[in-house]
Image (cartoon, rainbow, N blue to C red; front, side, top):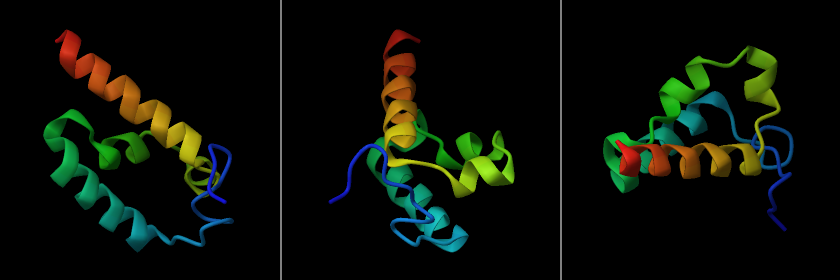
Amino acid sequence: VIGMSTTFNRDLELESIDLVTLAGLMEERYGGRVNLAEFLAGMEFEEIIELTVGRLVEYVVWSLRSAQAG
Protein backbone atom coordinates (compact mmCIF):
# COMPACT_ATOMS: atom_id res chain seq x y z
CA VAL A 1 0.00 0.00 0.00
CA ILE A 2 1.35 3.39 -0.97
CA GLY A 3 0.68 6.12 1.58
CA MET A 4 1.94 9.54 2.55
CA SER A 5 4.90 8.06 4.46
CA THR A 6 6.00 5.80 1.59
CA THR A 7 9.53 6.67 0.49
CA PHE A 8 10.45 6.73 -3.17
CA ASN A 9 13.89 5.22 -2.62
CA ARG A 10 13.52 2.66 0.14
CA ASP A 11 9.88 1.58 -0.29
CA LEU A 12 9.31 2.05 -4.02
CA GLU A 13 12.95 1.45 -4.98
CA LEU A 14 12.98 4.38 -7.40
CA GLU A 15 16.42 5.50 -8.51
CA SER A 16 17.49 8.97 -9.56
CA ILE A 17 16.70 8.24 -13.22
CA ASP A 18 13.16 7.34 -12.15
CA LEU A 19 12.85 10.76 -10.51
CA VAL A 20 13.85 12.34 -13.82
CA THR A 21 11.05 10.38 -15.49
CA LEU A 22 8.63 11.43 -12.74
CA ALA A 23 9.67 15.06 -13.22
CA GLY A 24 8.86 14.77 -16.93
CA LEU A 25 5.46 13.24 -16.23
CA MET A 26 4.67 15.95 -13.71
CA GLU A 27 5.68 18.63 -16.22
CA GLU A 28 3.33 17.07 -18.79
CA ARG A 29 0.50 17.08 -16.24
CA TYR A 30 1.07 20.42 -14.51
CA GLY A 31 3.19 22.40 -16.95
CA GLY A 32 5.41 24.99 -15.34
CA ARG A 33 3.25 25.18 -12.22
CA VAL A 34 5.10 22.24 -10.61
CA ASN A 35 8.87 21.98 -11.07
CA LEU A 36 10.13 18.76 -9.48
CA ALA A 37 13.70 19.32 -10.68
CA GLU A 38 13.80 22.69 -8.91
CA PHE A 39 12.27 21.15 -5.78
CA LEU A 40 14.89 18.39 -5.71
CA ALA A 41 17.73 20.82 -6.48
CA GLY A 42 17.03 22.58 -3.20
CA MET A 43 17.53 19.37 -1.20
CA GLU A 44 20.54 17.66 0.28
CA PHE A 45 21.28 14.13 -0.98
CA GLU A 46 19.90 12.50 2.19
CA GLU A 47 16.66 14.46 1.86
CA ILE A 48 16.21 13.13 -1.66
CA ILE A 49 16.89 9.57 -0.48
CA GLU A 50 14.26 9.97 2.26
CA LEU A 51 11.71 11.79 0.06
CA THR A 52 8.20 10.60 0.85
CA VAL A 53 5.05 10.60 -1.21
CA GLY A 54 3.56 12.96 1.38
CA ARG A 55 6.33 15.53 1.03
CA LEU A 56 5.95 15.48 -2.74
CA VAL A 57 2.17 15.83 -2.45
CA GLU A 58 2.63 18.82 -0.12
CA TYR A 59 4.99 20.41 -2.66
CA VAL A 60 2.55 19.85 -5.54
CA VAL A 61 -0.35 21.34 -3.56
CA TRP A 62 1.77 24.32 -2.51
CA SER A 63 2.96 24.88 -6.09
CA LEU A 64 -0.55 24.75 -7.53
CA ARG A 65 -1.89 27.14 -4.88
CA SER A 66 1.02 29.51 -5.50
CA ALA A 67 0.36 29.43 -9.25
CA GLN A 68 -3.32 30.26 -8.67
CA ALA A 69 -2.49 33.12 -6.31
CA GLY A 70 0.11 34.59 -8.67
